[in-house]
Image (tube, rainbow, N blue to C red; front, top):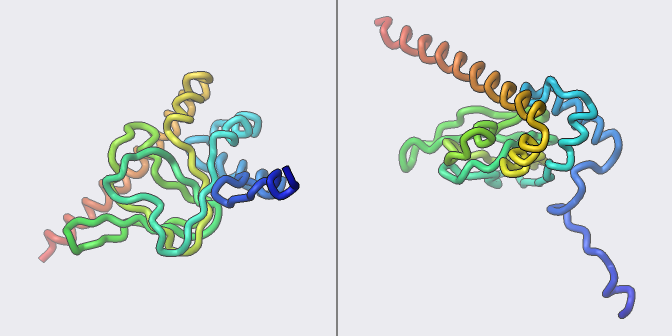
Length: 178
């Protein structure tokens, strides 16, 4: 066997999520700013790092489609992602645009239901994803940390639901004023 047969092929799809210690440190701080992981120590977050997978998307590329199975939480490391919902066969509504440090897909960590919207890379993007089965295993092994994670998810859902209620009331009042 010659040296060519022994070479490892490097693929960005399978690459390590962190290219430098600085990136790792930045990502740990990003994780700790997300309500799901805010109660975690740096050591706790370090344990979670092995669960994250790096994915790269080109501008215009779908990260997931509406009605896909919900399989994970995504954190934007670089780039911009738009969340879109198709409400009719030809009506596409942009619900949110997220940038570096933002996250989306958290409901998949709870219910695993179909995606209610699509996520599309608005710019070339690097995202870190944690898949539900990996997180479920982590929660089973570390139940106290799991409780913190579930409390963080509940906090996110509560904040977003309250915001949605406010938006609904505001819209109703605008429609009722004639």
